[in-house]
Image 1 (cartoon, rainbow, N blue to C red):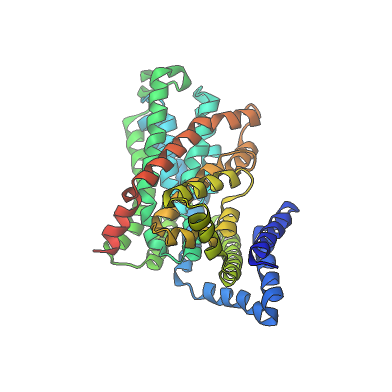
Image 2 (cartoon, rainbow, N blue to C red; image 1 turned 60 degrees about the horizontal axis):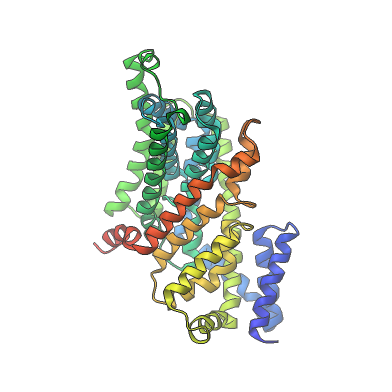
Amino acid sequence: MSYDMIALLMFSSMLLMMATGQRVFGAIGFVAVTASILLWGVGGSDMGFSAAMKLMKWYPLLTLPMFIFMGYVLSESRLADDLYRMFHVWMGPVPGGLAIGTILLMVIISAMNGLSVAGMAIGATIALPELLKRRYDKLMVTGVIQAGSSLGILIPPSVVLVLYSMIARQPVGALWLAGVFPGLLMAALFIFYIWIRCRINPELAPPLTAEELAEIPRSEKMRLLSAGVLPLLIFIVMMVPFVTGYTSLVESSVVGALASVAAAIIKRRFTRQVFEVATRETLAVSCMFMWIILAALAFGSVFDGLGAVKGIEGLFLDRLNLSPWTILILMQLSYLVMGTFLDDTAMLVIVAPLYVPLVGALGFDLIWYGVLYTITCQIAYMTPPFGYNLFLMRAMAPPEITIVDIYRSIIPFVGIMIVALAIVTAFPQIALWLPEQVYNR
């Protein structure tokens, strides 16, 4: 059997196992180890063991549980409530102010957690009821929460970029810094769209009236401002020493986790239940990602042994005679198609062993490509029928918001994400400038 047929058989077997409901890491790892044994005999089983050792020796992986723990402490101790109340009071008079405040809330939550699900949970439980009570258009606010929560996988500390860094063998810190400006660009485009749309049609988002503002004492406004600043201080305390070079990435993650606990203690919200939930969820999410990384490394080792990357490179460059940019665009389009029925981690571990070496061979920067991949994942999070955020919103939204409303609400925001993807693709320095400044100082 030719190597091309072996690679095709591996892909089809893996997709078949996923279709039967098997876990992503189980399907990928089983196919990888089985293929290695059939191809190279008993010694092929060492590939899985080698992948495990490589994973255990990867020091930056220690950041993963630290940042996840920090995010869950902030979420479970309800410190995010203070942030949203602050935005409610200070942004309420602006056209679409509460929706804009929701996007800003999602940016801050993303900078403290790195997971889309955390932003979705906070937005659906805190922001959505308040927005609907204020007679905001249900389609717009549903789209705002889904789009805003997707920023969690791009703005550092992104957990998805941790997974990409292990597969692409790129530094996590550089990838996180590369995601800063693209993430802020996308958030700015969301805010600009909301503001323009609400200026044209104020009925979509009625602002707070002068009477409602007068009912809020100035002392309450200042109290909310100070309460909302506390989570921002956590991010500053965590990231400034890292960017300036005083702490390593792992040390900064520990500082962030301790700062979140200190903030919860100061607010007298760090209870036994908060600690138990944060610890349990951190363990569950961390183990899930470690198993996925382990399976992906084993799968990639088999493809390296088969020479599949050289085969794909020869197909695109020699037989089809495509330009590097055409190949890059085709890869991104394939991610968009796969995103309609696969999640982000499945997409990465299935095609990364092929795409990442090919991107490097074409002369593109792998840090920049990691940002392009992550933006594409954000789009996949919001495209039916599989989109994670669509399912989460349906589970958390009130009955008056139907699945049809949820699908319709994401159309303009998916369009904005595609625009952001095109901008970052055309101007790579948007992603690369900050890591170059920090790591080449």
